[in-house]
Length: 262
Image 1: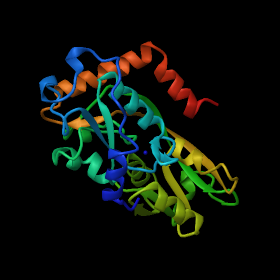
Image 2 (image 1 turned 90 degrees about the horizontal axis):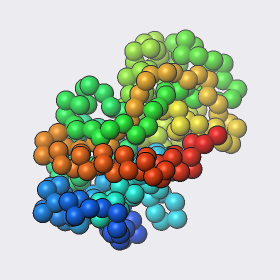
Image 3 (image 1 turned 180 degrees about the horizontal axis):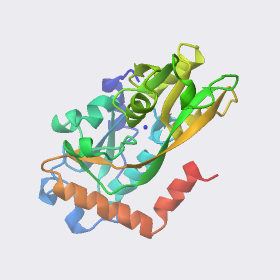
Image 4 (image 1 turned 180 degrees about the vertical axis):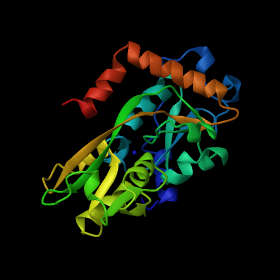
């Protein structure tokens, strides 16, 4: 599921991205220490994300948006909290380092739920089912993962796409990148022959017709929002309650359809 300018983006998060709290949450879901949510900043739900990673998180018209960001916005609103967003590298996020450092309350960045990650992170209920995929130039002779021997394949460091590629294309030369932005620039420049990563992200790179999806991989992956392993029990419960409410009232489906409906 990116060279970071954290100071600038933190300032943006404090300004353009902070949402005024509005109704929908109960008294028990209020802000601050009294809520028992152990938040980094009283009155705010501070979210860390690896941006851009469209369609899950990206910047548009000076505001962070995308499937993950829209869900986070609704969840924060339902908890009577403002939303603040910090842009971080994915490896620090999926390892739990930024959460352990109290940089944010929750991570929303197309993070696949795995047993290895669950050893260091607390996950929300699953909110998205995903596939892996192989992106190649339209004139490429690569038709499947079996054609990757001796080829340079871009993968994002610390992701399940990297794991899948290493396990299923052992004769390929895997080139690690910190983000999708660098990966896509590399395949555009011809520095790598293919990209292996989450299907929705690769689909976004096919819009101009220069690239195509050579193959999709059913990996039974599900995304979850991540929180600190210790001390976030109340926050996990509150987030799951909001996810359930969004599904029940149709808001989840509306957001989903806005990004993924065919």
